Length: 320
View (cartoon, rainbow, N blue to C red):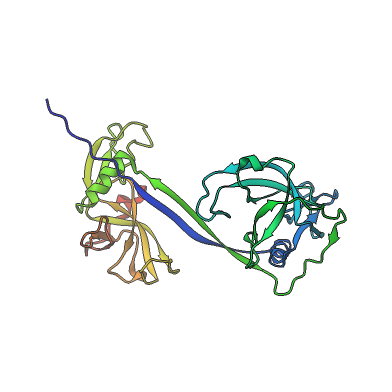
């Protein structure tokens, strides 16, 4: 009796990163412009509470709030959690505490990092103050962190503020990034390994007999395992498509270009791919295409027309 060794399931580090650009309304513009000028602003709600960070609409009445006030740069910790292993992009590169702190004059707490030598040095009720960044640009990072403070309390009298600043901050770009290890599982590992051999392999459901590409390991309709491997393609049919007019960062493809859903011959689920070898304005539903592989590539670089007559709509309408 012999046994067949299963291929090692693939794993790879994956980073999803993009810049998030947003404009600011008058309240957030004033708050971030104030941080740049070492001033912390809050808003006073209709019931007299002062909220820091400020919000644009009253959480109780939903009315717009424009009553800005300046609060202290000192405050009191309400609760905290120790962070023994700082991650990329966090305020400090040494262990620190995440704290919620009510700045003097505020009725809500601000989340930020507290620079402390260890968890024994942190407790609810301790007094802290803002440590300003040396270079400030109108962002929450203008508060470099919080630090323990044993000085006098700030005056309780709140100072109204117009919210007007010279060269006010009107928009921000916040980088979003997610680092994780991705494992495609057994079914997609087999699919990826086949792509390395210039083959496209799906899996058939033993119940409804649909062939899924890329395979998922189970039929989403019947809920049973899909263990029967089926080679599909290489030709296929464009079912739907879009014309891309905005160039993506780090993607060396000239715009405009076409990205399409392609139903490979023998598959019951369309996959997506770029269409090349034809002017973008000549791509159409029903266009017959085939994969183009680059040397050493682990997946098709793009799909190009085969020269065959267009597929009849009835043959692919179920995969649109």
